[in-house]
Image (tube, rainbow, N blue to C red; front, side, top):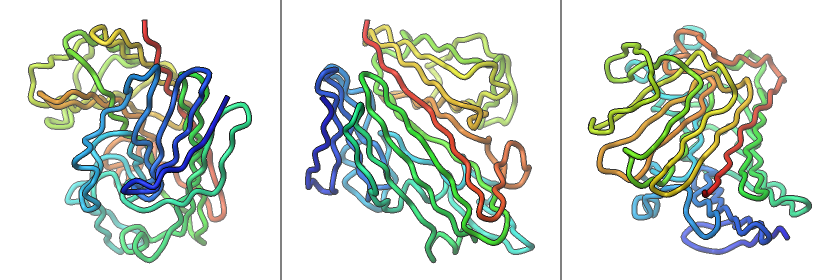
Length: 289
């Protein structure tokens, strides 16, 4: 049985449940359209810094933040359109703005669609008219995010997009990471290195971008939690970013449509013609063993 409940917490929260499977997600539209919680068999899958979440002026560290209209950051946070320079912060603005719920469904799955449209605030840093519609679907122990990106402008609209999910983890040295790439770029040094499937978690920070993906699936097995997490994605995602910080009980495995600075390099940048739209999706499956 699938249900959707609405709770008035600090923010209006939509709670989607699959009662039969014992799974649940929580969506907070006005806090960046974010999924804040994902429960499987009563256990948290996502990490969330709850204290930070209560402060609207701080970016959310946890859940599944949305990255749009860019992934990562730009040199000096600037780019140009038709000779005019714009300044935009890392990962863009979608994760900070209120989204609107348009549809809810409990037939065969629990789903909710949230929408973000351009406004004067967004056009000050990104001079395009757009509409994003994301549908979060829960069925069993799988969470799917279906996305539609629509260009409502009279000019071509460039963008990249992705997600920044934070996964709660135990002992990081017991993580087994299987990524479909043989090399990564270290964001701190910008150097490329071969990847042998192992991370050195004694480092203060790991911020690695993996390109040249050879399949549409990646897994992380957390042996200390006895949890295998599978990320499936379509052709829209061309990079995976693995990020974690020493001493914090999370890691991030992030599907991106393009890597950093795509606004300036054009690498894997999506450009929608006026009036055009595109769709994408990715799924997460959590299995305890």
